[in-house]
Image (cartoon, rainbow, N blue to C red; front, side, top):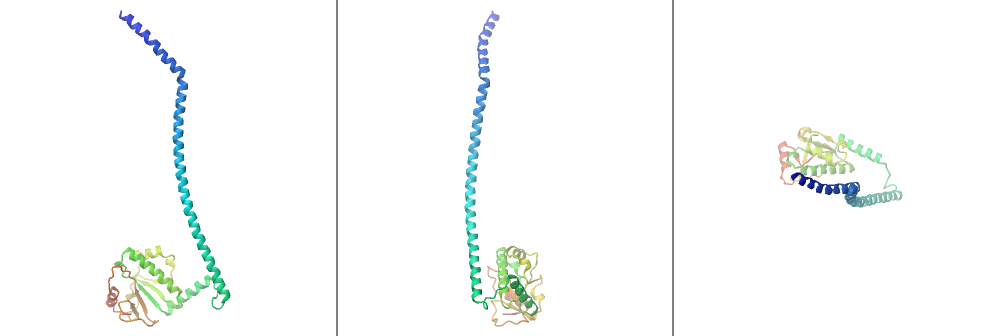
Length: 255
């Protein structure tokens, strides 16, 4: 009895399973291929969307870069035009007044400036910047002092009778020296003397004149036998009379 029931059950399940297998066999390859195609389409669409976003972002960046580039090119072109106009103006002035505007090459002018500076080194006048007080200064103050040294050197070079400049108390491994190299183009080729010695031991004391705004004496004339000292101190906290105190400690005269 049980055997007959199992046989009937097996006979009933077999057609159903067989029908499912036939359906899979009929649609298997085509159905799988269609599914893969749909999946591939989804992947393609996602990839294209990402490419579109990337392309639009790149295009926006490119436009921004191009705008900045055009702005910079306009600035450079304006500077070139201005230099050209200035050059033509100087040329016209020289043509109208050949005696007042003599034409010299840059090499000649550099040699002339160098000759004046070397003459000052041997016969005076001499100017010393005392940098022995830089340990009182902050990094910001050191940067300002480096800029002042550059302006002092540039103005002195243009003078008809320049000073020979000494930078004393100035170590080549100091923060100030590194700041001068960073801020001042060609600083290592400046025509001046640098020494780690302080000015009071480098020069005879009787030749020193310490220039300070705290002095009661005004400087009215330049003595070629004297060395005039500027205190290399940028002090935003205003340490009043610091230069005068140092001068008094070393017993140098002041103006």
